[in-house]
View (cartoon, rainbow, N blue to C red):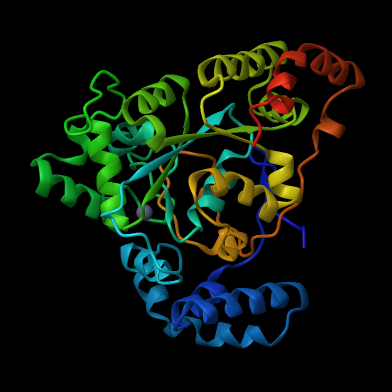
Length: 367
Ligand SMILES: [Zn+2]
């Protein structure tokens, strides 16, 4: 079933087709088993062009299409997807899953797969929240859109609910809370604690995924929440990661040094403390087994819906294009374009200079 995604060098994925049919059918399926059946049927249809195509005729009448122009699914839809399975209530203590590692390693794909779990919400690179709430495009003056299709986070139903929740609790706007303030470790007063808590309570999901990948932020969250913050380190073959960054920004040696520095700093910071390690290549080749290994340390089971990650609505801050150009299916193929984009000499240089990070990949940290 490995197929995939087009045109997303950061995650090595290619996007194809239209996801609306599956989403409409998911909306109308009355219970979790029916929804799983829908997923299975649509996967088969994607491969064979079978009878599910009839659903397309009904799509224009679907409420979610009327309200969202076929793109933006809001909080109502988010809550409906939670009905796929018993959802952890907000009274359970909120926990943070923090994705760490270098850029261009597939962290957005991993976040989308985690977001598809009924007990998890992923919100992208949360350390960019204030910037995205205020930034405007220099040419158009437009604000940064939400991955759900809303023209800005302020226009997004989910983030609007988070803002209202914070206003009701602390009489502050969401943008009054500086998520890059790393000096307050008190769960009752820290801006980050208020934002995470509001996300968890509005979505009614116990686990909140932050894929910021910033080391200082990870250290801060670990100090504040200790075992209630679980880091997942994502690693990609350095040849694939460096080739991807090189294609986007040019240069070469600086990317190798940066790659090594990121994983050396993570190795020192995390030491023997609890964390998971996932390889991008494993996630693509064996998603179920790999997701199981990630979820087991935090007490969760793999859910089959996670293989349907492309059809689950999300409200990501930051991250790569994949979060916005949501695919019509969730099939995957491994991006190994580095085999064509790098010279033999460049491959040898990368192999020679990334010996240090290989200790991380193969070391005792891996679950
Ligand atoms: Zn949104």
